[in-house]
Length: 260
Image 1 (spheres, rainbow, N blue to C red):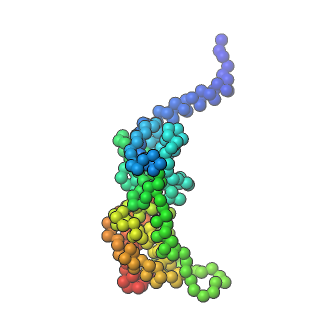
Image 2: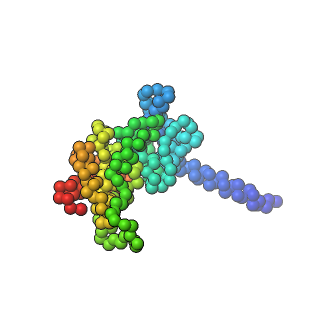
Image 3: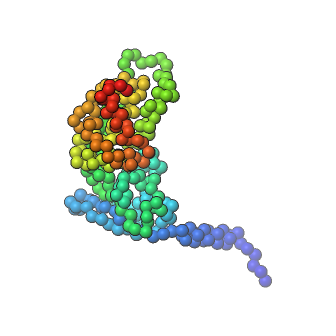
């Protein structure tokens, strides 16, 4: 005698099949994270965490699994998780990347994946660094539109060609990946750094702005644009694909020619 199928049993069986299919895609990876807690020790140490994960997931997902399921003391920054806020810039396998844009499958998961804080800024705890010097350099270049005279009664119009002139440098998300990849910045934290220069570029070459000369004089300082050694580290590190080195060279040229 046959037994009629139960809708509840069918749903349960389908859920189990889905779970098994999902589990079959998982691999075991090792995340080797540089941990530092100033309340415990003056020295950082590498700690290994093994976890199952879908190779199509991101390093940020792996950090979440560790934080939520293995070790709640792990500390890192993240916000939007979609490559826009720039909060989760870290060094992954020795390269500056956004954890939310780096897929496990793309970084050789058969070997331990190293994750450490970006360089050149003081580490506060684990993967969190002190961003104050970075943002101070950003503020120092006056990253806002400067105009003279009375407020206009209509929108400040701009041609497509004029807008295109600085389009690339509008993409910056202030993640500090470029600045913290710069050897000059590592050795001298007084250097403005690539990100500050990129954001100065964005306004220096804006046809509506009238503060270009002021910004150029700021960047003409001994800690300004001339410290760049054109190593292209910053361009390679930028998760937004900005031609950072090119922007820096254009600012140098503007300082010499005073044409912008």
